[in-house]
Image 1 (tube, helix red, strand yellow):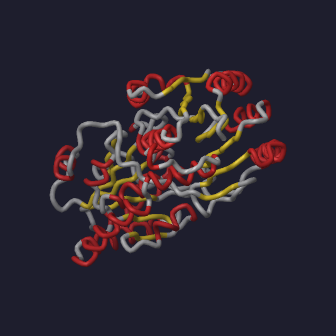
Image 2 (tube, one colour; image 1 turned 90 degrees about the horizontal axis):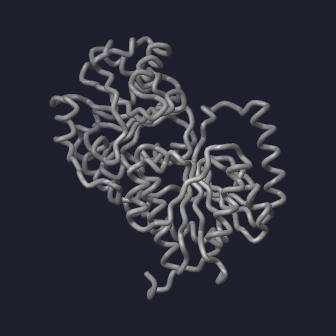
Length: 384
């Protein structure tokens, strides 16, 4: 692939904070650069207003934005970027899957890598419209042939043409300067000693099971376990007011309970993980959540629903599992996790597991796997 001038990363990502995704993408871009190629990044137009985007630009990374218009406008803009950067690999994340496929059809020397990060099925079979759309995409995939490669982040995900599994990895360096420890964060959150703080990321509340988690907290408090507090991290589409309304509509809670805390997203997400006594994933469907990986890496035990996307975590010794969609079983799992925290052997096990997670989900090993999908050879020692 000596003729390759660049790898173009097309990312439907505009979150307020870069998090593990942007940090991972930058590590991958650095690995591309070590092979003498340019890493080029394209995002939706609103991303240009994010601090992480400006930080990437300040680092000298080739970042740009695409129009917010329809499929063909995005495809036309994408073709211009492919030609200008002389890209031979187009690596697509989260969205833009259709315009990327169309662009690849029109550039027959382009290798297309579709990175399938998400499962928003909520455990339900797709409807007729989704199945028809999938059938249409499969026809395009057949035309692309071996130029198409697909990366799935979990073994449990159904795989399309030329699909393989590469689990996500943990990128240690984030776009943040101020790191808080457990004590400082718990003081800031008003969590007194003895509080059992469960952390949940609920930016898509039905998929993420915010209702299941809130109802589990209500049951715990009704049973006298008033030490439990649930912290729900919202998102752009679901700020605090909408999360409270969702909980009021779907549970026996009013959404105003003192044991429900609504937290803003942060670049330094590890302050939440360190402050938490347990990380709760009540999701109805997942692919491979960064949040569980981050929690385990700092020794925070997890409680997860019994779905395919979290089976890898359920097998670990510091994780408790419950029946998906069952608040009572979720409450029981939270209780078990807190009881285990008091055990000295369990405390040693979670610290040992944190070290294993950092080793097994190393970002540089992940980047090397992705580059193999591109067809790039490992970097020589002289270029590393």
